[in-house]
Each structure stands twice: as structure tokens, then as C-alpha cells.
Amino acid sequence: MTWGTELWDQFENLDKHTQWGIDFLERYAKFVKERLEIEQTYAKQLRNLVKKYCPKRSKDDEPRFSSCMSFYSILNELNDYAGQREVVAEEMGHNVYGELMRYSQDLKSERKHHLQEGRKAQQYLDQCWKHMDNSKKKFERECKEAEKSQISYDRLDNDINATKSEVEKAKSQLYLRTHSADESKNEYAAQLQNFNGEQWKHFNVAIPQIFKNLQDMDERRTVKLGETYQSFAEVERRVVPIISKCLEGMVTAAKAVDQRKDSAIVVESFKSGFEPPGDFPFEDYSQNLSRTGSDNTISTPKNEGVVKPDPKHSISKVAKNKLWLFGKKPKAPSLEDFSHLPPEQRRKRLQARIDELSKELQKEVDQRDALNKMKDVYEKNPQMGDPQSLQPKISETMCNMEKLRSEIHKNESWLSEVEGKVSTRGDRRPSADVNHHTPHGRESPEGSYTDDPSQEHRSPPHQPDPRQAHQPDPRQAHQPDEFDDEFDNDDPLPVLGHCKALYSFDGQNEGTLLMKEDDVLYIIEEDKGDGWTRARKQSGEEGYVPTSYVEIAMEKNSKGS
Image (cartoon, rainbow, N blue to C red; front, top):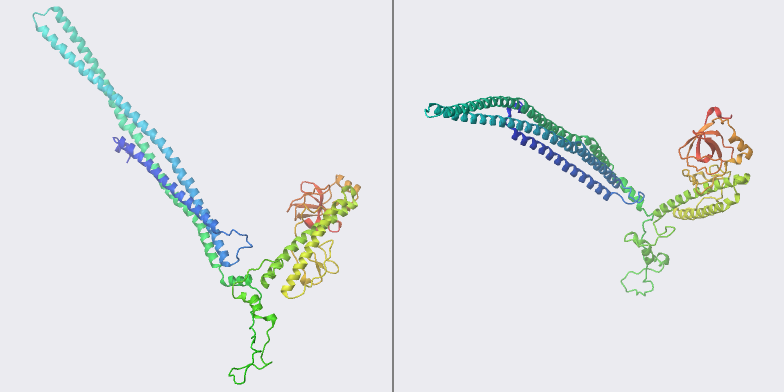
């Protein structure tokens, strides 16, 4: 069933229907737009909510309770959920709303074209009808004039008083009118035949084709709506697996709540280390009162069961120092040795400070060793630099080391006091290399020595600071002429192994090689005891790098060569 044959006379109604179809499509597009705006607003509000309740303090200051950690995990999952709502809004805007608006513009252009074609065909048919109607009216007028001329001629022909000239004139007029009527008749017949042909073409060819195009356009609009309905649902369906994972993550976080673990954290956080208070002694203030034998009161015999007041354990003093455990704790100023804290909390704070100072001391030790190596190189190769220029920095580093060791010793004394034992740490003395054991002890990361392996503190290696520690010149292992000859030699040295950079090295001095952390280099000369290894980049650039800055892996066939 086609519009062209069934609705040949419904041009105006089809015009209204196709306009309604486009309006409905744009209405649905508006619905999708409002829906995606709701999704965007929802996602934004969820992100703001997560941001509002996320911890604003550093991780060290945050509670370590499982309930808190689970809540933060739920916030992270909710933030991911908000991201999926944003994905829904974005895909709806691109795949549904944007597609509908583009298609709507195409439909408007196509509809306008088809309707213009229909109006042109109708106008041409109307024009043909007017030509036919005008020729018909002209033929009618000519026939009437010919009839009048016929009557006038017949009247004069029968009139005996009419002259011959008058009769001839009437006859000539009749002939002209009759001839004009015949021409009008022929023109009318031709125009009528042309109109009938154009009318047949209009209602059997032109209009059916135009209406068929309008029908195809409207059906494609309907199909597009169905496709966008499905896309609307598919956008939501695609994020369902990820949203399910977010919800599963929330459930997993909820199951991770451990009340016993949280209780243990409370104990660890607030345990004071104090012993529960003992019984208060009875203080008898009635010893100096005289009592008669007739008194019925029970008196306490002298020197029996009477506890003399001890100033060291007076109620006022004990109450001042102990009773706060059961009431409101008095405020105390923060002290350097944390003596204002309970023993257990004081021990933790002191241990944390010692670890921090030990790390700082290790950095200073590394810097000192690097400066000493640099000084030795300058002394052996004066052309590389002035050794005395490093002395102020070395002195400053030694001074910092002594200050840090003093601080560590002081805090260790306080820690030993808290733990109830005397520190067993030995004397501290500097070492040229913290990576090697000394004959009489071991150097801990904070620079102290101990003979007891159990007392030795270990910490991960710290990256040297090239900005503060001047690196020794690598050419101390070679004479200047030999050094120049090695670099001027056109024959490249064989590769002995490879190494990976643990730290970045600026390589500002002549003969050194710039490298960045995690760079892989080729080893072409091993460390000869001066702390430097000669390496080559993949680009062919060669130079010396600090041995302590790289992790070396030698080839098996190069050992002993």
C-alpha cells in the first residue's frame, strides 16, 4: 500500500503528517538531552559528595581502622560509579542526541525538496487548466458571434428592401465569424487534449512518485527512532558490568570490616603503659589524741598497724599524678622528650624520631664519602680542581653528622629510659665506606657502631644528592696521559657486562657520563678501587659513573679477563 495511489488527493494532509513526524523526532531528542543533563548533574553531585567526605589529612594522620578504610574504599568505588554515569551522559549526547539532531536537519531538507516538487507539479497542472479554460471560453464567444452573424445575414437575405451590398456585407461578416469559431474550436480541442494528458501524468506519474518519496522518508524516520530507542538502552547496558564491579567492590569493602582488628588498633594507639594504681594507705592522724580506758572506742595500739604518712606517697601527690587516669587528663605542654605522653605513646614517638634522624644521618654519611673521594681525586690530579675548595663543604657535612648523632644519642637515651634499660650502643666513629664492615663493629644507618648484630639498624639505601655531594673525578685511577690516550683511541673497548642506573648522575665534570635513573649502560672497564666504573651508552658515548650509583651484572666469559 503506497501513498501515491491511495492518497493521490491528500497532499495537504501528507504535508501536515510529515511535519508532525519531524516534530516528534525533535521532541524525543529533547527528552534524551534532558536525560543526559540529569546524568551529568547526578555524576557531578556524586563526585562532590565523594570529595566532601574524602580524607583531607595526610595518610599518616588518618585512622587505620578497618571501618574507616572500608568507607574510603566505598568512596573510591562511588567515584568510579560517578564516572560511569558520566560515560552514559557522554555516549547519549554523542550516539543518540547528536545523531537525532543531525538526522532531523536532513529530514527537514529532504521534506522541503519533495514538497517543492509536488507544488511545482500542481502549479504546472493549474497552468494547463487555465490555458484550456481560456481556449474554451474563447470558442464559446466565437460561436455566439457566429450565431449573431448568421441571424443578421438571414434577416437581410429575406428582406426585399435590403440592398445587394448590405447582403454581401452580412454574408462576408458571417464567413469571418464562422471561420474564427472554427479556429477557436480547434484551439480549444488542442488545449483540452494537452490538459488531459498533463493531468494523467500528474495523478499517475508525478504525484505518486513524490508521495512515494515522502513515504520512504517517513518510514526511514520511524526506523531511525527505533534504532535510537535501542541505542538509548544499549548505552545503559554497556556500563552495567562496570557498575556491578563497583557495587561488588562496595560489598567487598563492607566485608573487610574487622571489629577485632579495630579494637587492637585502639589499644595500640592509646595504650599508656602505666600500671593500674594500687591501694591507698591508711593515714592515721589520731595518734596524738589521748584516749581513756573507759572509752568504748577501739583504739589502735601504738606502733601496731599504724602506717605513718609518707610524703612520697601522700594522697595529694598521688591524686595529682595518677587520678587523671580515671577522669579528665590535665593538659600538658609538648616537650622535646615527649615526657608529657604516656610511656607507650612516648616510646612510639621517640622510635619514629630516631628512624627519621637515622635516615638524615645516612644521607650525610653518603655525602661525606662522596666529598672525600672527590678530594682525593683533586689531590692526585690538581688540574681537575682545588682540593681546598671542598673543605668547607666537608666541614659542614661533618658538623651536621655530629649534630645528628648527638640528637640520635639523646633520643636513644630517652627511649632506653622508657624501655627501662640502658642503651647498649657503642661509641660512634666515622667510617670511610658504610657499605663495608669494620674490623671492630658495624656501622648502622645513623652512623653508630655496635658489636651486637641484633642491635644493628638496617634501612634501605638512600639516593645520594648530586646537588650537594660533589662526585670524585674518575681519572684518579689513571695518569693524565693515559686517560687522554684511552679516550683518544679509535678502537672501542670490549664490553665486559652491563649495569642499570639506580640514581640519576649529572656528569658535569670532564670525563664523567650523564645518566638517568633506570638507564642501561655497557661496562667497558671495572672499578679499580677508586669508586668509579667506566661505561658506554648505546649511543656510543663513554665516561665514568659512580660505582655506588649502578647495579652491575658482569658477563661470565669476561671474568678474569
